Length: 48
Figure 1 (cartoon, rainbow, N blue to C red):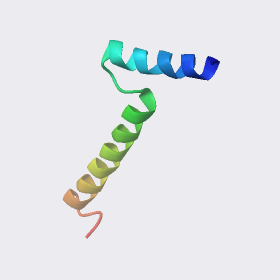
Figure 2 (figure 1 turned 180 degrees about the vertical axis):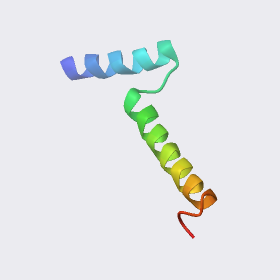
Figure 3 (figure 1 turned 90 degrees about the vertical axis):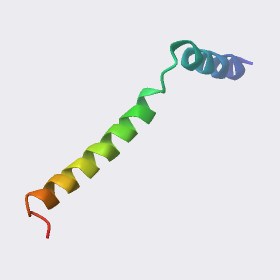
């Protein structure tokens, strides 16, 4: 029963704030940052 309440609390917090969890946002941030560095490396001819 406590697990159901915990899951309900988690989904309510996402619905109330309208924001994704920090782990999700952090994963996207790191992926996009990595792509940015690859593009910069191509631009500065570090990667040929």
